[in-house]
Image 1 (tube, rainbow, N blue to C red):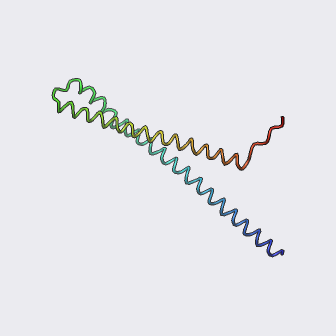
Image 2: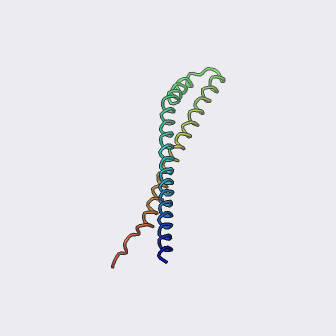
Image 3: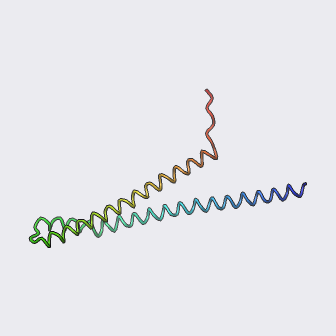
Length: 122
């Protein structure tokens, strides 16, 4: 019986250790994913502000003086492209905000599950 209890204790300790490593790895992976997505969104915002935002100002200025329908169409195409890329960047930024909010909720729910709040005495 003693041998059985020792083996059971070792197996439980091993199982708990593997579970802790697995959970820790999952947490690290999720946080790395959020961090990488956030960094990518910031780079995309910077690229958009550096490369496309000035094009919008130029195209808007030239649109007022455009003489031909072809020139107007080309400038409008530029404005549409800049707007589409801005919407994409804003979508990525919104995704990051949602990922962070969701992950915070999950961590809080797990914390409450592991350490439930003490019941209040009335």
